[in-house]
Amino acid sequence: MTASSPSLLPPARGVVRAVPPYVAGRRASTATTAALASNESHYPPLPSVLEEVARAAAELHRYPDNGALDLREELATSLSVSADEVVPGQVVVGAGSTGVLQQIITAHCDAGDEVVFAWRSFELYPLLVQLAGAVPVPVPLDPFDRHDLAAMSAAVTDRTRVVLVCNPNNPTGTALSPAELEAFLAAVPPHVLVVLDEAYLEYSSAGPTDAIGLLRRHPNVCVVRTFSKAHGLAGLRVGYAVAAEPVADALRRAGMPFTVSALAQRAAIASLAARDELQERVALVRSERARVLAALRALGFTAPDSETNFVWLRLGDTGRERALGLLAEADILARGFAGDGLRITLADPATNDRVLATLARFAAEPAPAGAR
Ligand SMILES: *Cc1c(COP(=O)(O)O)cnc(C)c1O
Image 1: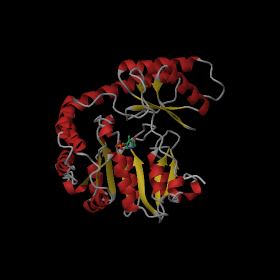
Image 2 (image 1 turned 60 degrees about the vertical axis):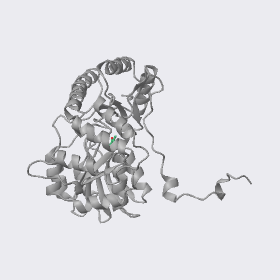
Image 3 (image 1 turned 90 degrees about the vertical axis):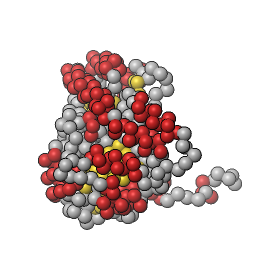
Image 4 (image 1 turned 135 degrees about the vertical axis):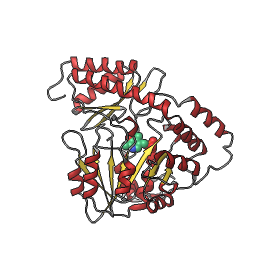
C-alpha cells in the first residue's frame, strides 16, 4: 500500500471531480512570441497606474479595505448619468469579473438549479455552474455566431435562476443591439437574474451600452465589467458588478473577504482617472480591427464583425489545426476551439501584419476538402 493510493485519499465532491480544468490561453515563452491567445491588452499598464501600484505596495503588510469603498465610490460616480444615479451600495468588486461571476453563481444557485447561457461563449461559464452543482443550459449561437435570444428565453424554466449574456460575446466578438437586449429582458421573468457580462464593452464601436438604464427598467439585471481587458490590468485581478442594492448585498455576502488587493483597488481608481489616455489605445484597437477584418475577408476567411479586441475565424477542425500550426511556426499563439474556430487577439500593427502574412500563407496553400 502506498500513501498515494487514490482510493484511500479523501475524495473531492463528485461535481468537482467531474469538472474539466479551465484551459487558459498559452503564455509567451520568449520576448518575440506574440501572445494572442487570451485577449489581454497588448499594451502595458499606464505609467500613472504603475506609480500608484508602487505607492500601494509600501503597505502590503496591511489587509486591503474589505469594502473597497473608495473604488466603489469612484465607480458609482463614473457610472452615474444625470437621470440615473448609481450609489456605492449597488457596486460589488471581486477578484476579476470571473471572481464576481463566481459570487453570482454562489449567491443564486442551489444544486439542480439551471443557468442558461449561449454556446459557444466564455469557457468559464459551464465550469462555474458545474462547480456549484447547478445545471448548465447551453443554447447554440445562431448561424451568424450571435446569441439566439429567442431560443435563450425559451430555454428559461421554473428551475432557471440565472441567464448569462456575454455582450460582446467571447470568442465570436459579436454584439447585441440595445433593442434586442430590451426585448429579451421583457421576455425573461423578473425572478431570473440576467447577467450582462460586458468584459469588452470599451471596444464597442457603438459606444457603451446603456446598462444602467437597463438596470433601472429591469431590476433583475446585473452588469459585470472588468479592469482586465481595455484597462490593461489582467494581472491585478479586479472586476465589478452593478445591480439593485439587495442583489449587490447578496453578492457581497457570497464573496471571500480581501480578495481584491489594495494594489488592485488603487490601480483601478488610477485607471478610471486615466480614461482619456486609455481611449487612445482603444481607438487604435478599433482601427486595427477594421483593417485586419477587411484583410482576412479579402483572403477568403469567414469572420463576423467584431466589437472586441479580437477576431474570430470560423474554421473546421482540420483547417483550424493547420492555421494554428502555421501561426505557431511564426511564433504566434492564438486560441483554437474544437469544433468551432480560431480566436486571435488584436495587437499592434506590426504584430497584426505578422498574423495576416501567416494566414495569407494558409489561404494560399491548397486546403484539404472541407477544411475551410
Ligand atoms: C476576459 C473575460 C472576462 C474577464 O475576466 P477577469 O476575471 O476579469 O480577468 C470576463 N468575461 C469574459 C467574457 C471574458 O472574456
